[in-house]
Image (tube, rainbow, N blue to C red; front, side, top):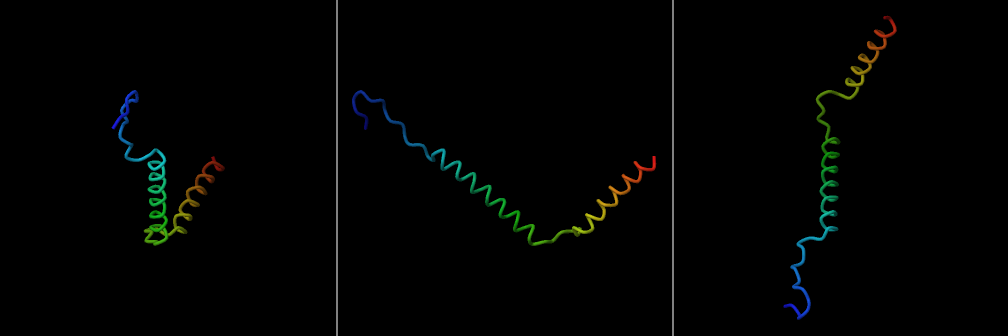
Length: 69
């Protein structure tokens, strides 16, 4: 109900800006937690040491190519 001389009040917003922001932060944290949990489970197709060895071979052969040309 409005009083004379005052504009009609609008209905309150469903969620405040702070609640929206907090919800986004919580969803982001949950996605990060889920990703960390997936990474900790393992199940990697190629072991990390093998990827490091392949990278070392690529960089070494690139350096060899540069130094010998």
